[in-house]
Length: 196
Image (cartoon, rainbow, N blue to C red; front, top):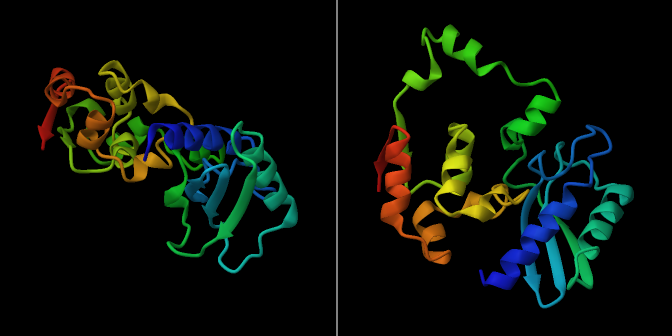
C-alpha cells in the first residue's frame, strides 16, 4: 500500500474510533467490526460486519460511519460494504474493548490458575512470519518494543486492527526502511527468542 493510502487508512481508522455501536457502546474499531478500508482516489470503501449475523445495518450507524470517514481530509465519498464473513466473534475485539466490557481476567490470575508463578517466566517466542496484530495481542510489551525499534506508527490508533492483520515484522521493516537485524536484537534484549 502506498504511503499516502496508508496514511489515509490510519486517519480513517482514527476517525472511526469515534463511532460507537449503539447497542454495545464500544467503538466499531475496537469491537473488531472494521474488516478493511479500500481507497481509490478520494473514494473510501469501508468493509465491515456487525456483531449479530443477519442484523441490518442501522441508518444511524451507517451515517455515523460515513460522516466519520468524510471528515478525513482528502476523502470526498464513502461507501459502507457490509460482509458476514469471516463471522464476527468476541475474539475480534481489542483488549481495550474487552476490558471496557468487563470481559478480561487479570493476567496474573490467569497465570496462577495455570500454575505459573509469573507471566514473565513463560518463554517468549516472536515468530517474524506472524502478523503484528497477533503478536501484539499475545505479548503486552510487543508494541513498545516495536515502537522503540523505530516502528513509531504502530501506536497510531487502529493501525493494528487494519494493516496489522496482514503486516509482518519483515514487511514492516522493509516498508519503513528499518534494519531487521536491529529489530531482532531489540526483541532478544528483552528476553525473546526470535524465529524468522
